Image 1 (tube, rainbow, N blue to C red):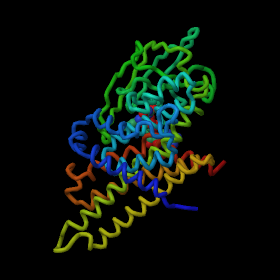
Image 2: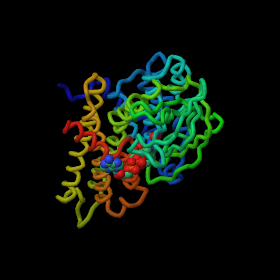
Image 3: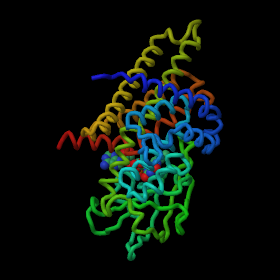
Length: 383
Ligand SMILES: Cc1cc2nc3c(=O)[nH]c(=O)nc-3n(C[C@H](O)[C@H](O)[C@H](O)COP(=O)(O)OP(=O)(O)OC[C@H]3O[C@@H](n4cnc5c(N)ncnc54)[C@H](O)[C@@H]3O)c2cc1C
């Protein structure tokens, strides 16, 4: 067993960090305050090769494994400090492009993957609805077959990149009577289709540089060839794959945020003086730093273990849910510690730890809440 990154992996991590420090971090405070997506930053990220990282090389990607993709997300989050950008990139890769790579027909892959790999097209996945999030089987969006066409009606919400995408993978009910496992189908819906509308832009607590929107579908007609995967199997095929990538890989962004919070806190603790000495000399501060470091190490190990198990074809549902649940909760706890350690300055947005807390909270909700991960883990334990 080898817990060390190879020299090649270490060099790659260092290069992503350096890139992010130079091209992503500048201006993050203003972008966050304005809640602004920055297309220039995206193009730089894509130009650096991150938009196609895990996509197959024959479609313009780099063919990176889950572990390497996670390393890149972690390094980007650390160096760039732009969690919204990480959210958009992570969604683009793990729930936008990869499901097409894994379940698409040759025609679908040829059409979408090369432009996703260059970042010219940004991926999005829409399963959540206003009244159905954790309970995916409660989705109401319908796709009615009319000959060779399906007609979609309904609303999706909280969709990352929904206002940027050329194509959105939409999960809709195709059989009103079938059990959940056979009732839902995924469709590649082009966003210039008549009846497709970005019906609301949502303002949110953190990750503000990433657009989150509500999408409405009013008699949106899509051809049968737009089905992604097999008809009726969306929940356990495309949907499962999306959640799996989010849990094993995308969560690495939060690990990068934790490392950033810890490093900022160490630096501040050494510089800030109280009662005539650096606050780093106080036991209470040292204990906080130690707990942050322990959480970071646990979070990183769990995420990388899940990624490694997935890469090597091992069963990993329990470890993926453990990684997702632990990283999310640990990231929030450590972000709170970082603020406390910074005192009043921790509460002011000029110090990045304030944003760090707002950003970290999403990791306990998106891609399946902590409670849902605990449900998955306990189901497996009790089976
Ligand atoms: C910024 C952001 C980006 C997102 N991006 C996307 C995206 O790109 N595509 C997409 O489809 N979705 C996206 N989501 C949606 C996200 O995946 C859901 O918000 C999440 O799955 C929770 O669903 P919900 O919000 O409906 O909460 P609910 O399911 O209504 O849950 C509410 C509360 O009840 C708890 N709960 C629910 N069921 C149980 C249970 N059985 N046992 C115990 N507790 C339970 C939950 O844990 C939670 O605490 C995004 C969300 C956010 C906030």
